[in-house]
Image (cartoon, rainbow, N blue to C red; front, side, top):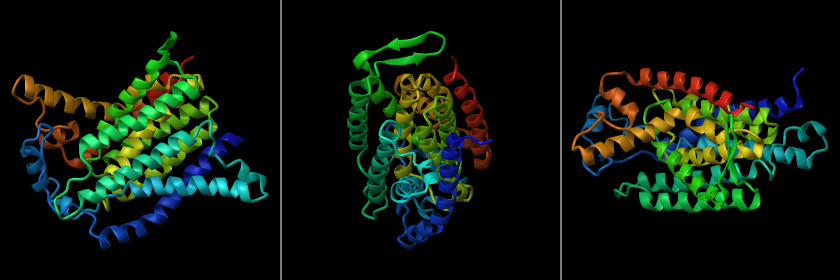
Length: 358
C-alpha cells in the first residue's frame, strides 16, 4: 500500500512534468516570436582570450545553433514549480477536501527557503539572459555583479541556517558531526559559489537537464527517508519540471536552459543539501560532491585549465569545461550527454547511500 508521504511526493512531481509539457509550446512560441537568441556568436575563453577551440566546435559540431536556438528555456522549470507549488497550497487552503491537504508541501520549516531561492535565482538569471540577447552587444549582467548577488543572497541564507535554524555543525558519515559554529555561513557561501560556477554544464543539448534531474531526485529520496516529506515533494516537483524541460531539450534542442535556469537550480541545490544535513539527521553536505560529481568536475576542469595556462603557459584540456573537451577530441555531443547521464545516475545512487548512512 502506498503511504501518504509517497503520494505527496509522486503526485506533485508527475503534475509538474505534465504542466511543464503543456506550457512548453506556449513558451516556445514567444521565444521564437521575439527571437530570444544571441545576435553575435563570438566566445572568449576563461582568461579573456578568443576561444579558438570553441569556435571550431561552433562551426562544425554545433552548426552555429547559437543564433537560431532560443535561450531562457529555464523559465519553464521555475514557472512550472511555482504553478504546482501554489496550486497545491491553494487547493488545500480554499477547498474542504482533505485529500488536497495531503498534497500541500509549502511549509516554512522545509520548503520556503529553497522555493524563494529558486525564484530569486531564476529572476536574476532572466534579467541576465534578457540583456545577453540584445543586439546592442551587451553581454548580460557583468559576472562580478552576478557573483556579488550570489554572495549576498547566500550569505543571508547561510545566516538564516546558523541564527534562525540553529545549524552549527555538518554531518560526517561514520563520525557523527563536525562543529563549525558561525563558520556555517561562509561554508554555505563557498558551496553556493562553487555550484553556481558549475552552471556552465548547460553547454550541450540535453546535458544539464539530465544531470540536474538525477541530482534533485537523489535529494528527494534523501529527504523522504529522513522524514522531510515536504522537502522531498519540492525536490521531486523540481525534478519533474526539469524532465519536462529535458523533453524539449533533447537534441536538437528547442530551447536552452541558460542563466535563468542554471542560477536558480545551482543556488537551490546548495539550500537543499544543507537542509538534508544535520537539520534532517543526515549527511546531505558530505554527499553533495558525489551526487553532483558531473557539476563538480565541470568546475574543476575550468580551474585546472586556467591555473595551468597561468602557471605553465599551456592547457591541460583541448577546451574547458570538460564536456567540450570530449567534443573536441571527437566524441559526438549525444555520446557526451548520455554518458554524463549514466554517470549522474550512478553518482546519485552512491550519494544517496552515503547521505543515509547511520
